[in-house]
Image (cartoon, rainbow, N blue to C red; front, top):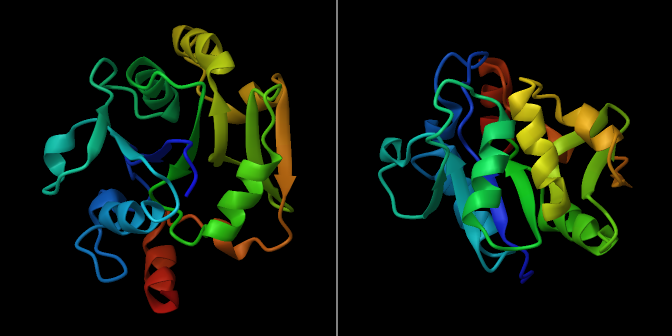
Length: 190
């Protein structure tokens, strides 16, 4: 087990899905969030769930609520809440809607991380995967500035930081379930 804390980001708006994807049933669990929590708890010693309001979940977990920015549904505000809550130098980030990223991919990212990196992020031929990787505390002030500037583009932040990219040939693990047809396809794959 890795001792880097893991944060599952489950506070998005889910506008493309048409309903809150963090609450959709998945893999024998009542919610996709519980599925992610269960499997990631076997890889990480500590797993947190970043969300706007923990009352939408009917299970116990380590929640990090982003209550200060309840009108902005960008990961930027979630990152700031994580930095405020966790007193660690780095944490692993994964989106609730990426259920196929396995221990193999996670450990490759963890092993590639260095103390001089601001972030260590997965990359496929489709591009970078900003919601799958390690973020260091060195980026905290950058996130605060991004929020002040109403700039929520993680790709821009990563390009202007000391980011280590970890290349993956297989894109299948990084499938994000943004649309109903992707969710249905994922149900058939699980």
